[in-house]
Image 1 (tube, one colour):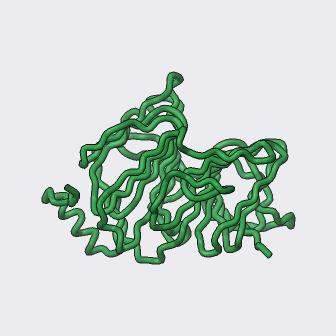
Image 2: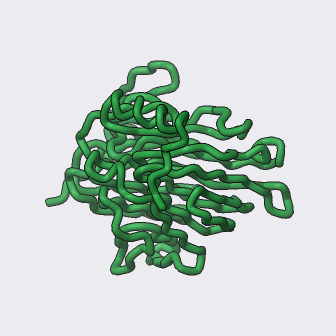
Length: 302
């Protein structure tokens, strides 16, 4: 019999300034990594006016990680040290494996209404893969499978499998699943996951119940962080839900519909040495990376 994953932790994304002056909200990142392993960071860069995003993310390095950019509105122009360039548009995904090192830039532009919406997720690479050659998997909106649910909802399968449909992103070490789930009012959604996987959801429209246990709950307040296992209130925009052990998650809606990212992956269980855009296993490896940046030997790819 499948056991439902209760909520382990709920976070609210917090305003952060990144790049050359991009106003975004960080769901998690640059803190403890064990809870989210193998993931490192999730940024919500939805902006309603150009002053929030137009300064962008000029040339900067990455090593030892993968960055996953998912655009909903507007565009992101990109270029890199391998000579690649292009534009990520609405509904498109770019899965970049930085590996041994890449230098790139990402410059957002708004839609005709000045809106630029999207997310960036960072996934760690295991030590054996940190120095592999950089690689891109670019996927346009039309290539992402849509699964229509019986309740009128929809699941966009970016990576992994859902209901017999496979997402276009492939050959990723941490066995991730990345779904964009939309549910109408008065509906439910259940999804099974491998018991060993880390699973979290990020709500960006509407609200929903992310735990099926109807009993009362208690929680401790520590700043903006809430801890509980039986949270029955509706969680809405900018809420990050981390699920505990179990085989499946269940989401239900009442008077509102909900839309959320549902992400999972196999933990790496390795030491993390992290400074800025570079994530390695040891401080010595970090030092080598930054020394190579200074010497001009950081780039290993041809």
